[in-house]
Length: 232
Image (cartoon, rainbow, N blue to C red; front, side):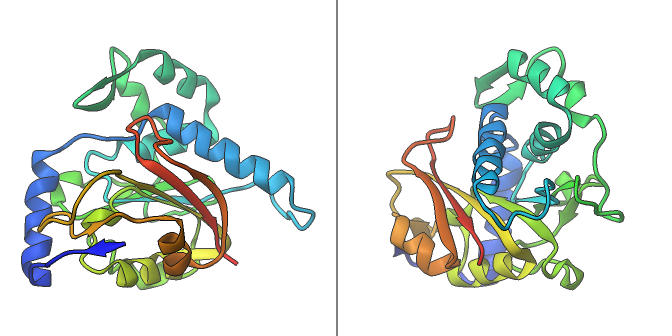
């Protein structure tokens, strides 16, 4: 893992707010969320100690327009709507749904009532304000989220000011036995905006511990490398 020169934390947060607004898109496909949940379900089915069919609640970090929050919710709870979105999804600057994008908002979760079937998000900029998205830093999430989430999805580790601080906070809000999904861009060098680069399997193990249950280079539809870690 490479960690480049960094701005002050205050300047880093301000730059990430500005960049988030200028790139108000999602790099997550419905194919990704369905595949992640399928892998986790398959792994859970292989465990003799499995106690529940519920995988959630699910939390996605640095979600910009929040599309992955919707896709995880529908992939978990509404296969019919997920199948329609899959038919009409296109890749143009980011992923989006043609004609039927309004279906993505069906049955949104609420931050004030978090259940096992909830799908929520964290976004730094107030532009992302929704009833299912917490506005704030992924390094400082609500104290009452301790051991709350069964799945945490994160495709912005490269934006972290300190990956060790970020990983510690993610582990704090994850349930024992939770799954952490990391999608990381390939071929980048550290920059002021993306201080973290060249993350590999051993780095993921060092940051999150637990058991690496899935790894695929360029595995996502955006060609990010996928890691899924089960917290022990």
